[in-house]
Image 1: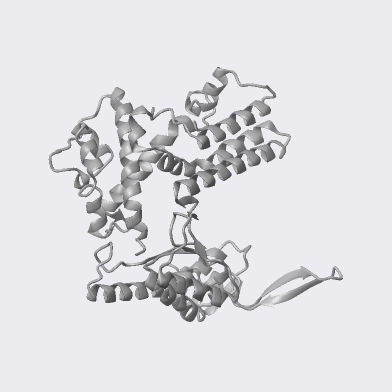
Image 2 (image 1 turned 60 degrees about the horizontal axis):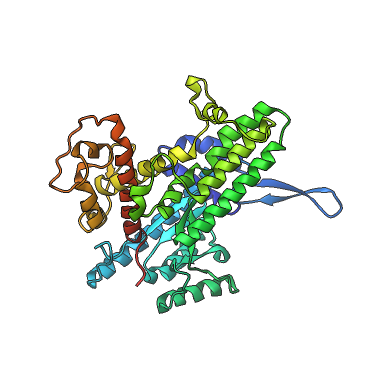
Length: 420
């Protein structure tokens, strides 16, 4: 996308946006004339061709400038989604959100994801094609995929079949656009437990491979450790929540130590970490005190590496409860505004969840405000902010892990919509 976006459209956006107008002189300096793209021909002679539109991928501001056009396009797509939902609502088709099934469009740099009712798919793709041309954006149909289920069974819905045929026709070949197990969304596995397990297994294997490459990357031990500490370990931290979500069953919550998480993914990554440190120190096995030094805070004389056994469940609790808070209390913005979501989603978190009500009845009310807003609590609980005793953290964290897992699994279809 970076090579074809309209420079004129980007410049118009900068002119119309007061917060970005200061970039116009820099943009004109870099992109008022075509870029020269150099290459070596078959005679090994240096040649070049002119890039009339788009931005050089090596330019630091290129991603941001290109994304401006995509944002403009997604605004147009959003208007189409709102109109479609309004039409369904007028026909008494309220949908699972009570508002006619409002679709949503998300983007991360040049990677777009849309959550749609099946009847919206073709109109949205047509909007991308028609409205994207003036902006210099072309939809790559060979990379356009539809997640229609997570059971492994293809959809028989005629509307979806029509959309799949449309994508193949636009691509000019059978690109097999239907996905029935799961997808990667912003680094997270979204789909069945089997898909997530396979995803995490591949991630742990890649992590082990990268650590092996790191050992051979430099002769300086300190450099290797810093890369391990600051680059390698953080590369898998975003998957801790997914590990708990897909492998912590609510019925097993009472048998799980929240500060000693056990899973195949955790075991694999932990063993890879220990192997790396052992090889770095030129020993066959690490003595127990080495791990204490390795994972002890830097402020107390340790090396400050993260212990996934201890941190996985807390990471899951924090991220999931934050999502639940956003779902019920709204999402704060930088200008002190609140973005609210459909009330049906917030109500489903406690009004339709028997497990939520049963688990809340076992909690001490003074604990709850640390994890959930008062709008989510059953009416018989009146929380206070009395600090809890430190030793009570373990059972509370334990119950919250099972609770959050249950809520998250039951609300996921509401977030992504159901396919009739």
